[in-house]
Length: 125
Image 1: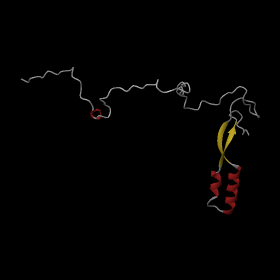
Image 2: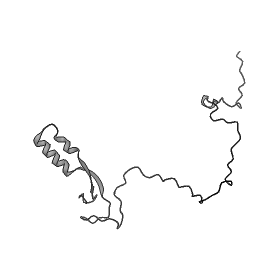
Image 3: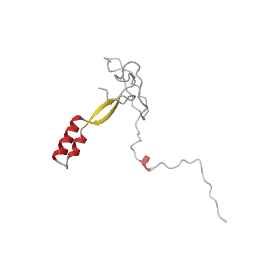
Image 4: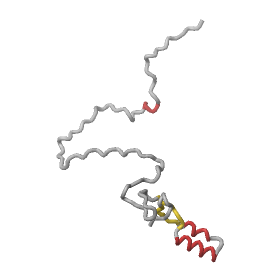
């Protein structure tokens, strides 16, 4: 017949290895800071509020109701920025296409940001 040992469930489990160091343990008393000894020249400012978390996804064009108007269709939605090949890029592309067939594609790498109306899809300058 086997003898069962009584388990003491009130005993705390051993601390993890990382907690056995003295890094997080101090034997000293808590420090007190005396703010009255130093003169105040400016009033203390309130702590800034934490920034609000916004949506990470694109939510579509925004209606500014009066601050912006598309010159073509008259909508109030902000233009969307698109990356397009610039005029200089097309010139470089055409020139290199005539003189060399190896590096003509370099002109396609020259791009610029172009604002485009999200409604009529025309470039807004």
